[in-house]
Length: 336
Image (cartoon, rainbow, N blue to C red; front, side, top):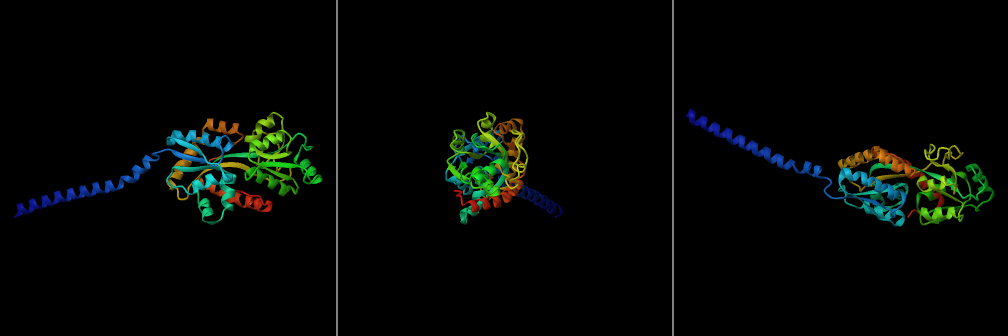
């Protein structure tokens, strides 16, 4: 009996060992899909939607970034979806699946102003988008045609007050330069006639040809013309002077501390984008912006790299929206 009981005990031990091995195998099989999925991302091209036509400054920056990200994620495609003052591309991303394959490369108007002004479920979806990372910052330059008898902001304000409605200010309809111009008018207390344009190119063409008197465009659009002496710069709208135009004062230095604005860009994802994907893409964008060639490419566009964690982007959005809502409501302009 002792031997029989001993033999039975060995069989039981062997069975327990086999059962334990089977349970381990089952646990391993159950755990495999999660890490395999994480390791395989991305398994297809990532889409970076630009809500503007190809060729503009934001589109160029998006393509520079996509080239850098492609080395980390495989293929990153830039897709232009213009229309509706950038709302077409914005809504496409806000309603996309949060699977890590569709993101938006947008700017101040698209990611700050329009979400704040959009109501209903559509607005909720847009405001719920996931901030990934800030990319660039570009100051605006207050520029005037050579015929305007003003060489400083103070002189321009004095001239505008002496000639109400005479100065023509041009800006793309529904774009950030229009908001900055309205902010200037509001803080300076001047009556300047606003002329809406379809884009920055036509605005600049009419300024260069003398059809309009004044514009507020980012350095990415104005720098070459300023350096050629075709237009007269009066001030930049950033808090500090622009490295590209170090002799030009800021609006703060010119007596208008309330006129501080930059054209920033950033990447956002659909609401519910997984935190792991947000973190991974944020890291890749920061690494791209830290590279010497990316810094140089942005500076040629008159822009400075930003980067930082998603919380910095979220904080900027919270700070920017109230300011621009005040401008929109005060001026009565349309943002879509």
